[in-house]
Length: 493
Ligand code: DGJ
Image 1 (cartoon, rainbow, N blue to C red):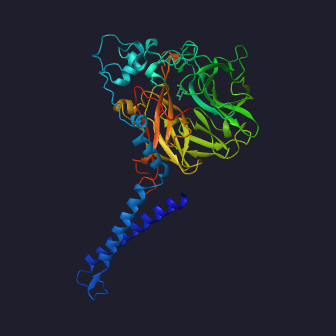
Image 2 (tube, rainbow, N blue to C red):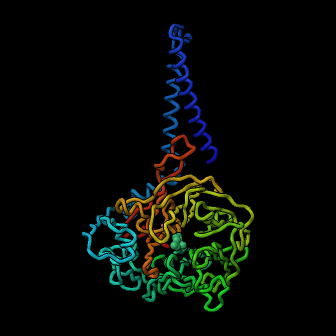
Image 3 (cartoon, rainbow, N blue to C red):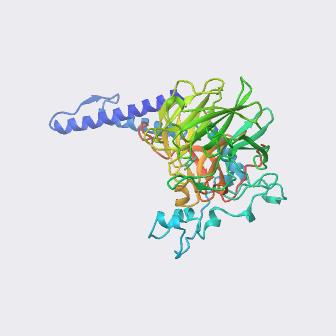
């Protein structure tokens, strides 16, 4: 791939130098108006201008450049195009689905918190989303009546994801696994979903503090089909009495992620550990012999000596795992490999997305290229997602713009009123992933919802990148909004 990138850049450089050469030549001709133009005899005996030949050459190179970009590195994108055009359920995934939500006329009464936020103004969809008394509440947070219950006879509705609806586990209780991630366990051929178990009351520790739920622990659910989830219980529990413990219930435990270490045979969990004011800014590590725990909590630290808030871990094909975390007061991300036992960071670290204020990183790899979805930093309120791409996981990472497609403009500017947490690769379906996000409900965090949507990597990216002479090199990452959708029937789980 490097060879190809180098070739494309070199080609463009050549084009540019030729065009610049032509421009310089033209200028000189203007200056030396009365001088004879440079000519040389052609085979046919006629005299051809050097500039005509250069123009033809430049045109040829530009055409070549264009064609190589159009067909760029999309080996399997051809494959996925094939799936999409031949498989009806694949075609459904890339259909652009619009949402037309009517904002109700302003009412006299708004909740005190919403009124304080925006005193006198016509309301927007975002205001409605943030207003816990909004008449549109049921649109963003549909109630139990519409819950997805995989255990009942769903007929034709089986295996359909309904982003935003309550999702019940096999015992009929709403799934509690927020800020979560998925581990596919090769040994048991089972998916495990780990996340924040937030089934407690939401409150503010003090006037200026963010809404919170006391730590209950990390919830774990297992599934063979990624639709029917069995509650495996709390695999890492809060500490009820010891106030000095990281997991003391009045602290913060967020975004737990688990990976398996093939060498040690251990399941290793990394998470964001904090105090209720988010000043500790650390990562925590726990370990287990089984995916279903119990996990033993080992320790917390500020990785590489830096503050660390939203984070994720990523295990690469070669078994090397990486920690990615928001740092320097969320102004940049840091990335670095873990030690080979995954229990600590090594001393290698890079700053990425410097000055961009991104959080909620969700990383995946497609055809040797690394992609990462991130959010902006607006507490529990939704904001615009961005995708970034890199040839090497350690960077440089380049911005590729907003991946969200469909819904409406506000949906796209708020990541469908949600925040990234993880991207699930799907074996046997190259280019298709599940984008996992949280639709936070700051008024009642246990009522936060899951937004799972198809993420597809194909076609050329649409945002010109910094050092690529204005031509996109990566494939486009698209997350399609759907009210309901399911994985292609070919996918067996
Ligand atoms: C945004 C983060 O992404 C969440 O995990 C959580 O830390 C909230 N901020 C708290 O306001």
